[in-house]
Image (cartoon, rainbow, N blue to C red; front, top):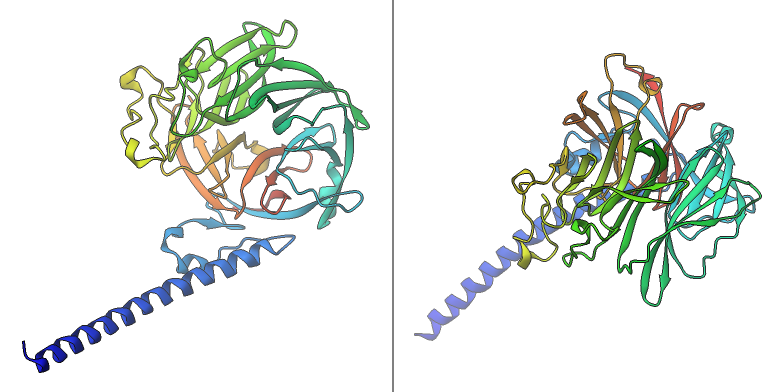
Length: 420
């Protein structure tokens, strides 16, 4: 080939490369500008002590994936307001841990994942203070081997705490109970699982009457991602189950099995609903049937984290004699708590069976409506909050929902501002 032709060929390569890079530079710059706008909006939202996440057209227009996602105060059903209060104690020290909430008389009890207990008078929420001074409660809970608190539950004058202790590189699931004393709570062991766990979670608690015996309903979990044991299917194991523990005899009964990680629990009479983490995708809302089997780790609408194990889980639950979920989120939202919305909150006479479901990675609340038999969902409405929501409780006297927001360690107060 002549030297002149070689020069021409090299010139064409250089020009083509330059044009390609110029085009890609424009694309990258466009994406970076969009992402920059998104981060700017999010950082503005997170910097406010009392936030009003409005229907932000800039955010919606910058990302088509947010099409039809509602932002407070606008929703399809209600106009809502969310105020955020930074968690501090009476000495102005910040409370910087994940936390759980319960209502007790006219007070709010807050427990951190590290085993610290606090209370606050409900009426202080109405003062619209940016920083709420939670009063510390002493306890005899031994936190020297504590891995983390999983949940708290208040029943009359008693408080129950589910947690994980570390023992010789083994995680042990425990529940403690104590009489509520706002000066100091003296806890005693209520339940201890002697099974060694490696990745224990769940631990949600509610009261439930089983075979005429009142007791504690509790969710259990011990599962390493993509390396599940058969414990959820094994009747001899207490993990991967929903259990009933008799208050008096401490007898343990398996209510249902085949669960992965149930992070939400609702009980109303004989009705039990749970929300459950799937693997990568497949978060579930389940109606719990006594002696029901929900399929884990055999069936899930999610997929493994390891793509090489893509055929690890069966999809059709019913085909393999498992109970199908009422609904499965694909992709997953890291589902957490589920609570029923009382009619007093929304005052829409023709609507009933409306619930709030919270999410962690989804950073959103979901309004959902069940049919009368709680066998299917009528609708789901997503409302973006912008933070991981660990827990929700309803405060009847104030007619508000309180949210445990665990990225800014804030208490969220959700209320209706105008009925539609």
